[in-house]
Image 1 (spheres, rainbow, N blue to C red):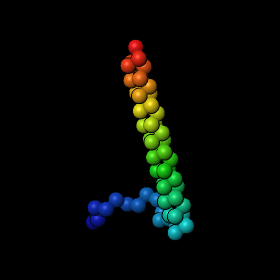
Image 2 (cartoon, rainbow, N blue to C red; image 1 turned 120 degrees about the vertical axis):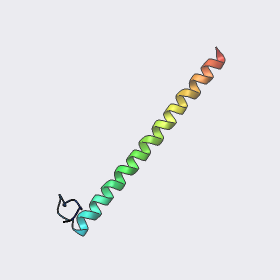
Image 3 (tube, rainbow, N blue to C red; image 1 turned 135 degrees about the vertical axis):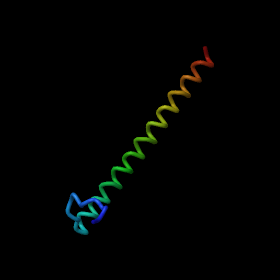
Image 4 (tube, rainbow, N blue to C red; image 1 turned 90 degrees about the vertical axis):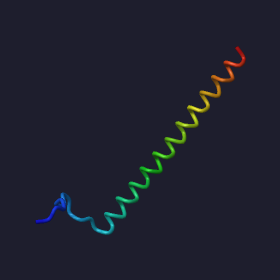
Length: 56
């Protein structure tokens, strides 16, 4: 008796696996760009608030 779980999906062909990897890489790159843009946006807002607070 094996303790390994049964495969729920059939194995992918080489082409399907490559497409899946490319899709995951594209999703990861999109997430990194979104994260960087969000970080820059938050930093700009904080800097703008700091400048406004110093002028008041």
